[in-house]
Image (cartoon, rainbow, N blue to C red; front, side, top):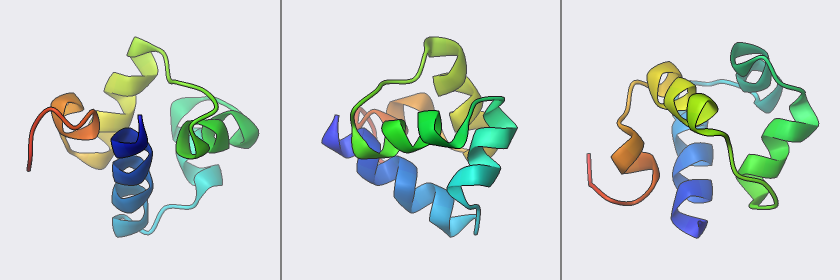
Length: 68
């Protein structure tokens, strides 16, 4: 899970998106999104795919199963 947290935060920042902006794009609250980045919650499959699409990366990369 640590890989997911790190990659999520790193990729979000590379797009100059705030946590609030990511939450809005996902249709969730900012506190819910923050929990993804700090590892206290995991996104649903639907939101995992949305995150990958927003950041233009693969789900495998986000989960640490592949390098870019």
